[in-house]
Image (cartoon, rainbow, N blue to C red):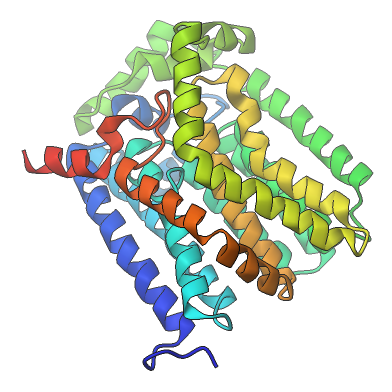
Amino acid sequence: MYIKFGVQPRTAILAVGFSALIVAMGFLAIRIRRGIGDFQLTHYYFNYSDEFLRRGLIGEVLRQLGLTLSNINVSVLYSSAVVLFLALLVLGCARLFSQLPIRTGVLFVVFMLACPGLTLHYAYSSYGYLDIFKLLLTLLGLVVIYRRDFTVALAVTCILSISSMLVHEAGLMITAPVLIAALMVKFHDRFTLPKAAGLFAVFVAIAMVIWLRGSADTMSFEDHVNALSTVAAPHDSEISDAAVVVLHRTLGDNVGLLLPQSPWWYAWQQIKFLLLGAPYLFIFVTSLMMVRSYLATSGRQMAALAMAAAAFAPVLLYPIGHDYFRWWSAAMANYFMLMLFFCSLNPRFLDHLKSFMDRNKHVMWLGIFIGITMGGIGGLLSFSVHTAPAFMALRAVF
């Protein structure tokens, strides 16, 4: 029915999506050549060889696999994780929008991949952080919840949420809320709000245990840096003091060290983000409101509220982490994963989504333009010129 010039929607979405991935791989190649920063690379050296350490799961897995932690090896590993995550999202879009007009599926996949908190954020401006592994765990959990029964889905939610927190304690706000919301959406009769709140409370307790028990206790900060430096030296890697110190300070210390430089500086970064991110924020909020209206007809509005809360939950990390726009990027990634999950469970909603996109296509194209020209939203600084694609290409050449 929806065939134009012999091209089917699925084929068009795959062609556009994987063409964008080729571009992303070009930027990843630039970053592989430049290497991962010392701060990010140091996290891959955290493991459980001497004691249990928070943020040590990825390093422990790599240690067990015997991977040499050279900068090039870690860069390739990280880049592969980014490509895998984005490719899975593209494949999800191709499957989901295969029965809709080509323009609908193509617009959605371009809007998604151009999002300042997605492709170029993970491929360049926030390169090397452990966040991508938390997102892969989230996506895996959503696939299992979609395909399996309640018992398996609940067990996988617990396993993957805890695993995400072991990768980085921020998994409490990035992975766990999304999987809990997905359980509420699919199993609304069995998994009600009180049960969801109870499960999240358990995850909060586990996160606190990870934080408290995951501090470095067997050696001093200086000895810890020296020990890691000894391990990294054969691979020409440098250990970042700033990364190691996180394992030696309390949560209160963390909050105190991460206060903004000044109120004016802080306000300007937020204003800049809100202005340039407005098209995406508008689409996110209004489409989630549409989900709420859709589910309200069947008395499932609490599931819709859980979806919205899960999407924006990473922003609650503002008080304890100064990488403000890493939290926003996680929120943006969560939105796309949840929307694809919801539409897969509710195919009839796709007609509503199509009409919504038709009404707001100019807003979406504005967002795409900003994403392509401004690049990733960044971490501490929002929409820094250094992350704009044109500037990145200029640096790569000269």
